Image (cartoon, rainbow, N blue to C red; front, side, top):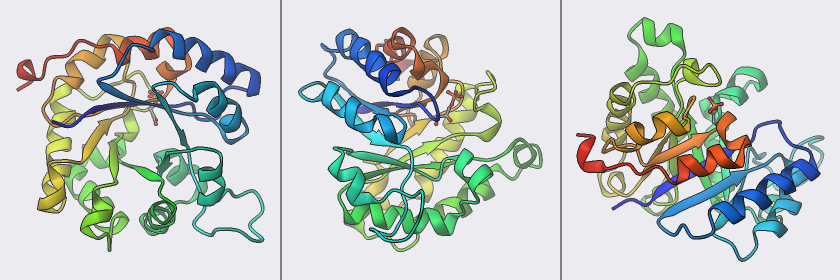
Amino acid sequence: MRKIVIAGNWKMNKTLVEASDLVKKLKELVKDIKDRTIIVCPPYPALDAVSREISNSNIELGAQNLFWEEKGAYTGEVSAPMLKAANCVYVIIGHSERRQYFGETDQTVNKKIFAALKHNLFPIVCVGETLDEREANKTFDVIKKQVADGFAGLSADQWEKIIIAYEPVWAIGTGKTATPEQAQEVHAHIRSLLPKEAADGIRILYGGSMKPDNARELLAKPDIDGGLIGGAALKADDFTAIIKSPFDKTQGK
Ligand code: 13P
C-alpha cells in the first residue's frame, strides 16, 4: 500500500508572518492524522520559520525549487545543502511554472533531481501536458518524453526516493480539474513507464485545482496516491479538508 501524500505548494505566496500563522493553524487541525504524509512547501524566506513551527509535528517541509550546483557565483539561486540545512525533506522540481517562466527543461530537471538525491532530499518531480498538447492528442507522448529525459540515468535505489506529480498545465489555477478518469488514465500511463521494480512503490500525485469537493473522487482512483495542492493549500481549513478526505479506493475502480 502506498501512503497517501498531500503536499501544499504555496508558490509565491505568504510573507514570513503569514506563513507562520498558516502553518500554526494547520498544525493544530491535522495533529491527529497519521495515515497521510503531509508536506508544506513555503517560499524560501519562510522555510526556517515554518520549520521551527512544525518541529515535533506530523508535517514535513519541502522547498519549491533548487539549483544543481552546491555553492558559488549563482546570484539568486539556492542549493541542496542549503535546503537540507533549513530542514527540508522534499523539493519540488520541474513545476510547469518553472518550465514556462524560467526556461526549465527536462535536462535541467534531470540535473536538479541528481543534486537533490545527492543531499538526501526527496524530489517531487512535476510532469504534465498543456491544453494544446492535450487537444492534439499528444498527452501520452509528452509525458513519455518528460519521464524518459527528466529521469534519465536513475539507479534502482534512486527511483525509490522519487515522488511524481502529474499536473496538467490547463488545470493549474484555472478551476478546471481533470476528471478522475482523465487523471487516472495518465497516472496509469506514467506508472507503466517506470522501471518494473520501482513502479508499484512510487507515489504519483495529482495537481491542478484539487479542492475539498473534488479530492475524494480523485483520491479514490487506484493510481492517484495524493495531491500537490496550490490555491487550496493557502487556507488551513481547505487544506485540512483535502487531507481528511474520506476516499475509498475500492470505489474508484
Ligand atoms: P492549483 O491547486 O492552484 O491549481 O495549483 C496546482 C499546482 O500547481 C500545485 O503545484
